[in-house]
Amino acid sequence: MAFAFYFDNTRCTGCRTCEMACIDYKDLTVGRRFRRVIDYEGGTTRSDGSAVVSDAYAYHVSIACNHCANPACMKVCPTGAMHKDKLGLVSVHIERCIGCGYCTIACPYHAPSIDPDLQQSSKCNGCAERVEAGQAPVCVEACPLRALEFGDEGELLQAHPECSSDILPLPDSSYTSPHLLVKQSEAALRALAQPGELANYPEIQNNIGISND
View 1: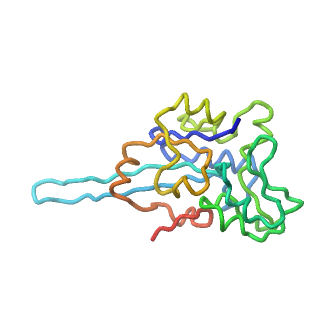
View 2: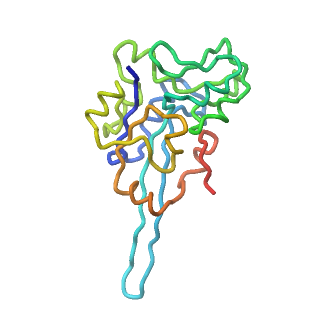
View 3: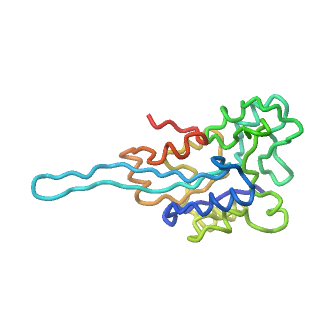
């Protein structure tokens, strides 16, 4: 069995309750996030002389570690600190981590980050202690719109057959085969033909592996 996150892009309002719940539960310092909300927008609004014409769109993507089937972070870790635990979730052996930062560079989602105080890698561990106790990760439980789910990937696929593992501006899922399932909104589908840009890049630039160029 593989655990996965399911994200319903049609429900997410970008409220950041998932972010705040994670920050509080993990007692993260100011500016650090294990789960992030990306605001993505594109299109134009213009006047054709007689009317205002708009093809603009905007949507939000909630993203954390995807506990990939082929984790890039594990491949480059020189000490074996980055590993899969007994639940199959990607975690960090703190006693083995030397803070080299290779995992933060290799992960296309930049899920791991270096704790500035401990000088060691840290990241979302899927709330493994909660999952082992039969509970959902705190971000899932906190979402007021129920845009997030977590569970057996096969069961989630059965419940949401329309989903994929890709949504802009995230990297192509072929890189690491993330355990992430996404229901794309109409705006996200429009972005495939008319790519946009990150609207909140300054907010999340230290936590993501996505260029805003």
